[in-house]
Image (tube, rainbow, N blue to C red; front, side, top):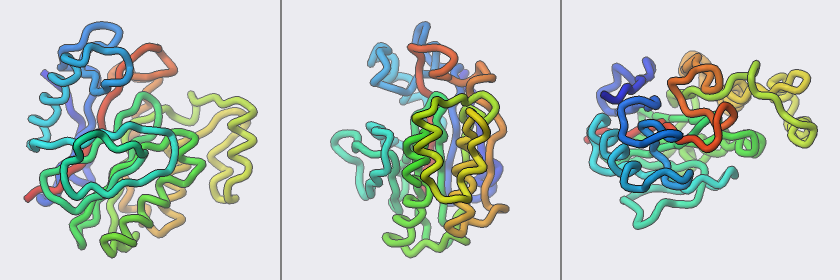
Length: 245
């Protein structure tokens, strides 16, 4: 049976559904064992489609939109099921029963819900996306498109590699040092805390700290999740959010 994690911050909100998958409960064979949700990592596409059907059934929706993630800051509005996966690292929507999914295996998945204007967002924040302020830009996109106020938004930060485990090279450190001062505390010596960096971005744009939930699970340390740093090739787990009818 597939094991799905739920954010407490979304749990008691009847108008939104969300989940984070783990590795177990799918049909993929090693090294993608077993609930791999990615079509781009070398897994059997038939197995991935079965896994995605399992995930959609658990969430209770017919349509889950997956991105072709490009490690940037492009944000796409989803107002109907797209014919092909959009090339971007964030999506926003106010349409019910269209779920937005982030695939990851160490990068930071971000899920957003505006209960006032009934809008959602999902973003993929690796170090490049985080350096490009993808969290800030996704909230800005929700504000510009739907009238969302950052102070109303509820945010979930799904499992990612932790600051203790994420060692980065000089090129990454040099890029990070160009960012605003408030983000530099996420870099200590040669280790970068991406979950913290994204939480700081959300705070900076006005998302209230009490409205942000971080799942305290490191993908590198916890074998329940795929981790690119721990094993490559490997699969990807999914973090998903949808509006209910």
